[in-house]
Amino acid sequence: MFPLRDHNPSERTPFVTWALIAVNVVVFLSYFPSIGGSDRLLMAFYSDWALVPAEVSHGIEMRTIVTSMFLHGGWMHIIGNMLFLWIFGDNLEDQLGHVGFLLFYLVCGVAAAMGQVLADPTSTVPMVGASGAIAGVMGGYLLMFPKARVDLLFILFVFIRVVTVPAWLMLGLWFGMQLANGASSVGAGGGVAYWAHIGGFVAGVILILPAWLRRGGPAFWDRTHGRPPHEEVQYPETRRSAIPLAGRRGAQRQGHDADPTRVPRAGQRRSGRGSPWGGHR
Image 1 (spheres, helix red, strand yellow):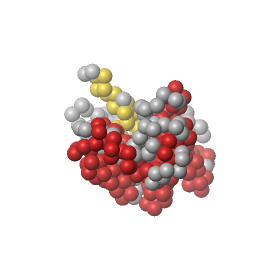
Image 2 (cartoon, rainbow, N blue to C red; image 1 turned 90 degrees about the vertical axis):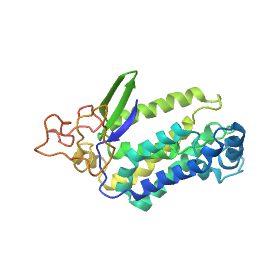
Image 3 (cartoon, helix red, strand yellow; image 1 turned 120 degrees about the vertical axis):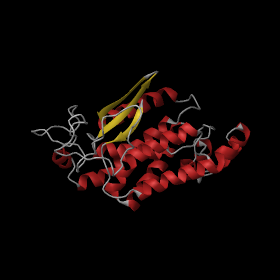
Image 4 (tube, rainbow, N blue to C red; image 1 turned 45 degrees about the vertical axis):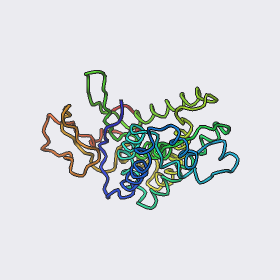
């Protein structure tokens, strides 16, 4: 199960999101295809550029707090991270502007790194990946668009299905899993840097608060019912052989003449004022 796309198009071209994806991919291709097959060479490379909590906690190799954000440990690692950034990054960039989003992303990445260092300051296991910064993007998205619709792709043997859920459910479950796994991994060493995810996510929520409050805070949710403040994308009924990309401007939007076989109108508001965290869509 993993997110495939959201129904929340960006109003401005997400140049920074695209640039961050490009930089991550270029950096990955600059080292992994050539040394990824050798554990010795890969660890030597990481010793120079990856974040080692035991070093940072003693004020050594502080530059790795930033450099580690642009490194990845394998193909699935970078593909998964860039998919999350592609889905959620454009909407935060839309709200914060290009420069504001870049600063938001980098600060979330730094907070994520420090979260992992504080959780396990004696660890000598190198940490790499953009997932901490991207977790911050997810935290900001949760506060701004709790009821934006997100499509999740389920693959179970030959069973393939796309299920649409509100963002609060998908992101809330994801964060809950990080908390549970983080609590059980303290002192275990190695594995996934769950506390980097937690630190980045919390930083994202905190950093997006001023933008959310400027839009009215809870009143912003009331006006939009927790959904994006613009018309959402309508995708054709999903088939195994053709799944549209996320966030594309060319995707068909809702309209009165929509084909009844297509996904029902996402942006329609129900009567009455309700919490945007409710389960109704």
